[in-house]
Length: 482
Image 1 (cartoon, rainbow, N blue to C red):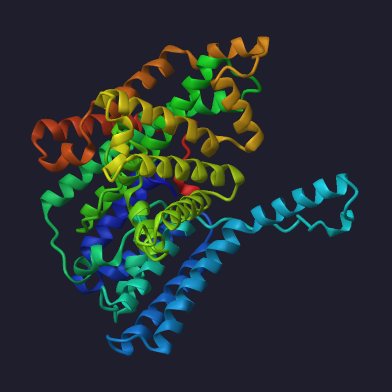
Image 2 (cartoon, rainbow, N blue to C red; image 1 turned 120 degrees about the vertical axis):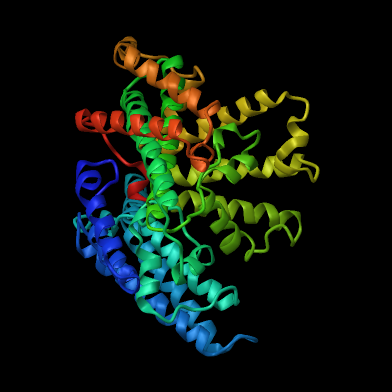
């Protein structure tokens, strides 16, 4: 079930809110858990079993760690946090990377067989394929961070299993984030305030997020799909398609995050925002402070800093950056294109750090450039990186980059592509997406003080989005499958 669907907007959400507010306060978390399991298991009820397993393991591990008290960590506590980390990473590794591992191994064997070095019998059977559970990358990180924080003494363990299940499974941010840290909602799980002002702001958030997704992300996605799926692309069309994908993934994911924050407010929760106008960043370092902020903080606190961060010399700093970005790329998807995407960003971060001279965000390297040009250069680098993220494989990525930089001779049929992607509707949507990206106020700022004129604007956009949603045949959620 996705937010931008008739089923969710007209049936699930009204029913969920009615049930939630009709229940006594003591039963609201239980009701929210049941609703979240229904939401998550709608496509495949078997997915709920995996989430229940992860929840149960981390709940028991949290209690085990807390039961031995603060101070010096005991062997039992170390074993409990190890079990939590290993079980979550094992789930994530098997379901997300099993197919990738088998395909990569078979590709290696096929190459060796072609050179007569090994027998074809060494290949693995590909009949068995593993289905990726929705949102497993998000809820395993979220659940695992709880036990790590309990082990570090940064939060107290939850005694009530329903409260913990509610933290892991809340449907607003379950399948695509933001990745919640327990410390961010611990007090709210114990007690929170429900007000009409929160509900109104939440609905405004949801309206604008839906508009971003349906009115901007979907049309830009059609442009991107058409160009990336073409056998040959002209130079300008290649840049147009890459920029369209940049807008698609931004409005798709930030729109989802806006809807998630809005749904949380409707239920009384205040979630941290996940985006801060990332394409307005003046460096790649600043971009990662603004893009998918909950993941960036997670990787910093649970991977980069434990590896040593920048405290163990220059070489280790760059090595840690490379490890974090490579794993961050692999977290996004099980393909070599995602690994290269992470490696590219890791290289850019390392270059900025090496040339920054202790200043934040690579300012020394670009200090002579005006701010608008620094933003432009950063956006162009991000555009190039998105080619790896979007391409079906390394071959497609290489051909598309060659088209972008004039290194490939387009076929005569490539001229026909313009008739599909240069339609007035697509061009107008692309222009509006660019204007909203670089000039419009952020959703967070727009709904912070919700006046009647702003409320009307939100409602109008929501109505238009609902009409468009019913007429569009193209409505994917990019991060829904991660």
